[in-house]
Image 1 (tube, rainbow, N blue to C red):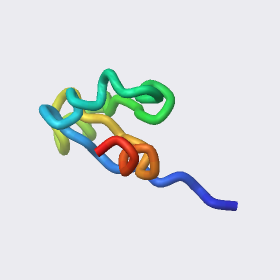
Image 2: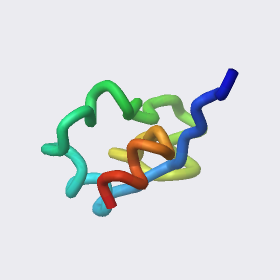
Image 3: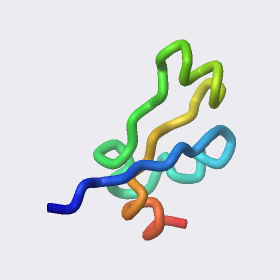
Amino acid sequence: MKQDTYEVVCWPEIQFLFGEEGFEQNSYLINDEKGIDDFGSSAYFVNSDWLRLHT
């Protein structure tokens, strides 16, 4: 069984993906304190396979 992998996409690059079909199903806002410290606000984990189709 294949497991999904995710990549971090930070602001401002993430804004170009907001309107893409499937964004909400394939992304997750990083909103914990460590994640915000590491990646800044408005960073998302994005499904790697979906991301490759939309960049």
